[in-house]
Structure formats: structure tokens, C-alpha cells
Length: 425
Image (tube, rainbow, N blue to C red):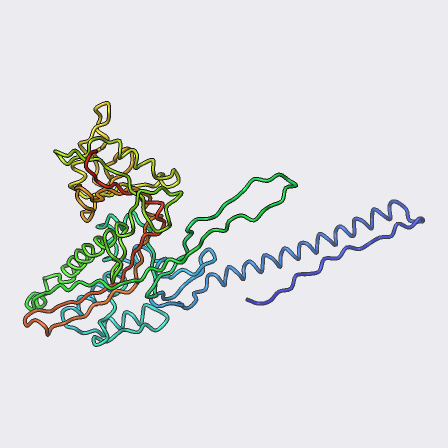
């Protein structure tokens, strides 16, 4: 963009001489007004020219600054990868190409096609690891397809906050409370109030793997779609491991589940940050089932109004079967069964998500969670996914060792509440 200087606008001062006539003053004023108008017009033209130059700069493609970013463009003041702006037709074409080179690699072990895709797709050089170093990067569109499957098949991924990272550890500031305020009049002193307590939440990304095996005979059969088999096995394995960790993971080489933080019977006003509040769910000592829906209602209103607007129930299928039979004092079911597959059932007006990793209803367990998980739980994905082809370990089989990195942690612990099942007093 070239530098441009704005024209100087000057205003002529006409002295009010005693001998000057009114006509002379009027003519001088008109002349000065015309000169000022012309100068402002030139200034507006210069500003328009600057805007055009800025628009032209924003339309230019700039080099990617991060791995797997590729060429980028400025959109609304921020860089966006061109791959994210591609049309559906462009993506369909890239998906066909990526699936083709991935399938060739799986059948023959020839990694040159993968390397060619990487070099042609990204402006910055993409370093493709050798098998000794841990495998080859899965082409972008194939990896995107797997991630889409993961999200559609995971209740926690659907309702939680999702983030991506290129670092081994994702860090984000969190407000641990402590901010206070006060009322004053116009002339009152303003005493200092308590400052908010900020902390840094660090979410490490840990490696999860799947290792499906395919016989060499099936690989040699051109009619057999080995890539679909790989994707199916990978997403099932990843889903099982990830979903369990998001709920009950201990944080050691895996995500920290929200049921693994301290669960206490303390309200938001007194509870320390990092702990989640529970409400007791009274069970009938003979049947082991909840005695009424009162505790469910208590749980709803234990959550503050700001979180309830986007709140969701989370439980497993067995618990859902028990809760769906509970009636209110008027004999009406509090559960509303959905009649469409795309719409979840509701409990007390809030949607229900099913995750089989939630505990069953039993004495001392926490079978039901309720809250705004988008504010309460954070899932972090590393962008890259790798695959290592191993035709040596098992004779007659080819193993595909697939890895990705994922992390998870409770984020705002005021946004999630849980029910604790206890025998009726």
C-alpha cells in the first residue's frame, strides 16, 4: 500500500474593514466557502483511495503462519485459512483426492502421494514424519471427516466447548471469582473493591490411539473399501476412550473428567473454585428408584439463571429409563419423549443427552448431571492426526496405528451440577 498524504484544508480570513461594502464581504465569504468545499472534496477522494488500497491488501493471499494453516486471507480483520473458505464443491473434490491418496498408501505403503498432497496444499513447507518418527499425517479432508464422526457420536462433544491447539498444552485464563462492587453518590469517595481472582487453566493434550488390523488379502481386493473400515474402527475406538475420560478421567495421561473433581454439597457462594456442587437424590430403599421428582427440580434451580438458559441433562440409558417413569404430584410424567430422531427428549423442559459412561443409579453414585456444559467443560483437540502402517508385527495382517491428541478439563465449575444418589432417610 502506498503512502498518501491528506490535503491541507485552510480557511481564509477576511478582515472586516470599515470601508468594505456588504457585497464585498458576501463575495469574499462565498469564495472562501467554495475553496473549503473543494478542499474537503479532495480529502474525501483521498480517503476513498486509501480504503480501496486497504480492501485490495485484505484481498491478497498472505502466507500461512502455522502448521496445517496453509494460504490465508484477511476476513473481518483476522486471518482465515483458505481451506476454511472453500465451497462445498471444492471440499468434495479435495475429499475425493485425499481419500484416493490415503487409500493408495494403505494398500501399498507408498507415502509419496501423501507428501505430494501436503506440499501442494500448503504454502508453508509441511514436514511429514517418517515411519520411524511415528507415522504420516492423515490428509486434511480425511481427518476432518473422522472429526465430524467423532462429534456426531459424542454427547460430550456436542454440548461442551471445543477448542483446537497446536501446542502440547492449551492455556486459557479463568475467573475464579472475587470481584466486588459498591454503590456511591456523585460526591462520595470510591473505596477500592476486591479484585477478581484470575488463574490460568492448563489443559494438556494426551495421545489416544486406535490400531485396526486388515488382512493382506482384503487390501489386495480392489473392491474392498479399506478406508471406510479404518475410519469406522478409528472413530468407534476414539469415541469410547474419549467419552469415558471426559466424564470420569483422572487427568493422568488422559483428560480430566468432570466427575473426577471434588464433588461437594456447598453452594456457589462458599464453594472453592474447581469443585462441583451436588444435590441429593433420595432413593427408595426397596426398589432403589427415586422417590419423587422434587430433587430433580431442586437440581434445576440450584443452577443459577445465567447457566440455565443453555442447560442440558446428561445421564446413561439405564438412568433415563428410570427417570422417564417419574411423575409429578398431579400424576403427569416429567419426561417428554422426542418423536424425532434429530430432537432430544426433554426433562422438566430441558434437553437430555445420553452418554453410557455416566454411572448407574446406585447408592453413592452420581448418575445425573445438569448444566451449561459449553461453559462448564472444555475439550481441546490437536489438529494433526497420524497413521503408521505396520505390515510386519502380525504376518498376513497390516496394522494401522492411528493416533491423535486430545485434552479435556472442567472450565467453569459453577456451570455444572450433579445428583448424588442416597437412600431415603
